[in-house]
Image (cartoon, rainbow, N blue to C red; front, top):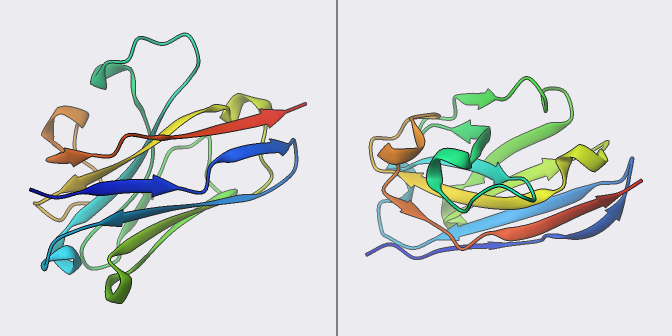
Length: 128
């Protein structure tokens, strides 16, 4: 069993920044691929409605959605079993619940149904 806990969400004005954190338990965290997804307001709470935002592989390869490239940065600290999502130049359309996911296969991205564990999510609200 892997525990996944997100933190760092909140309310911010457009143009502002937030840093999300995701702590995952397990002695083999360094082998996990980690992903950030989001679910916009009004979307059904199903995995298929979650939009990929960013991912980082076990060896540091990163992937980003086109909508966040140049604004968001994903990183990991294996000593702390934590992955981060630095979000800059936030826009109202970034408003969503942000979820962290664990891939035992170590990839920077896999389809949502292939992730092994998910956190409960953290709300990010960007006001205009």
